[in-house]
Image (cartoon, rainbow, N blue to C red; front, top):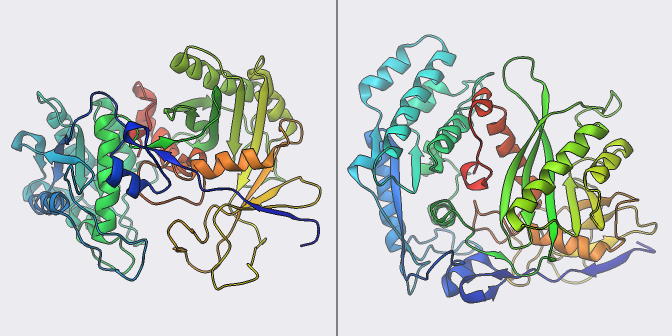
Length: 475
């Protein structure tokens, strides 16, 4: 390891109610409550709709009642597995829920028999989607309508609609993704949705997320979706900086042309939005299999769209423009992004990969490398950042085996030469997935949610509606 610069980036802090700071999202919610959006209330009541069979609706209501009073963890020896404290302004996270009969949509046994009797799986999936989407639309037409609609999928629907060659319980065909279609219906009705598969709902299988963890994550998701705002935000992001993660997807059906999907854009106050980038030309060539790279004009247009949206949110353009991408920036696309950000003082284009053989092993102790460890090799063309590892704040490493670093490779021309600042920001973005209450994720949220967003944008129906830019419709 001769010549390597080894350091550790401090754990980023999060901001909660009344500007209070904590490093752990769960501790922050319990001690201070979520970031307020408007006037402070002791209890935030979330209006909940539910669509499923009588049995799955009953189980969903049972789970919500359990969340109200609290759910104990069954894995007490694992420090990161915490009891869910319940919905209470003093001992819990300060939210509650309500549901009404008019906010429930029941898939009848006769409906499920009709689905099961169809010989073709594609037809079964289409029929099931029509039923679910019809119920969601009806529920969302009520006055008042619910804040969020839960969709606990019945086991019988999974049995007859999922791919028999897989055991994931996910329902998709060559032309249709069940989850994505439900998300689009929620978007049409301006109501976020939350889908639960049977193995999660009924706690079946060895690798299923245990109920206390499920409760934590559902509660955070309910807060984010119902309040249309973030439960927490980052304590330190540089002002007037626009951060964006770029990914790509192929449309389902037709000829499967590649289109750019800008999965997530963040501004320094924590607000975020999704941009759909339109059809692009892939200039990767045969020597770069599995990668997508933009032609100069496509990159220029995409950068202009990002900055235009930023300007609409902030009423001013940024001083700094940071792009994250899972593959290297070719010179042509880097020039295009730069041309699209003409007038921006500082531009940083960063490739982030999640697989590399580099490993750090502490000289003493049984614990693996610390989260936040940063290794910068001689030459400084890339560096290695441990976004997972031993977390001193929790006295635990909760991952399997030896933790892997992510690779940070800035573009040689568009880079400030400040590896530490760049990695501090990337480490911060691993704590900003509001679909989870986990302490952190492996990849920054600028890239980690790209696949789920791309799946939705890939649906042919997505081009027929006015897509909402807020991430809570996609998660």
